[in-house]
Image 1 (cartoon, rainbow, N blue to C red):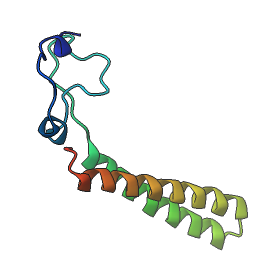
Image 2: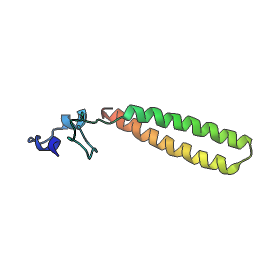
Image 3: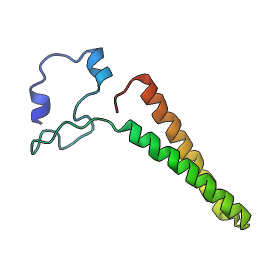
Image 4: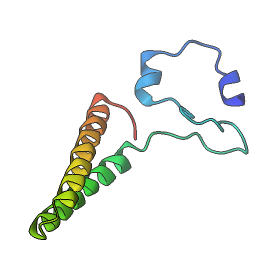
Length: 97
C-alpha cells in the first residue's frame, strides 16, 4: 500500500488521462516493481488474432459439415469481436497502453 500512501493531492483529469500507475494491481509497491500500466495495444492484437482464427476455424468446420464446431467458433468470433471493439473504444478515448 506504499504506492498509494504518498499521493496526498486529489487526482486531476490529466492524471486519469495519462493513466494511473498500479491500477488493478493488488501487489502495487511490493518488491520495488515498476508501476504497471494497461496493455491495450497487446489486447487489440490478441483480440484481432482471435477473431481471424475463430472465423477461419468456423469456415473449416463448415466445410467439414460439423455444425457444432461452426457454432462454437462463431460464438468465439463474436465474443472476440465485441472485446476488440471495446478495447479500441478505450484506446481511442485516450487511455494509455
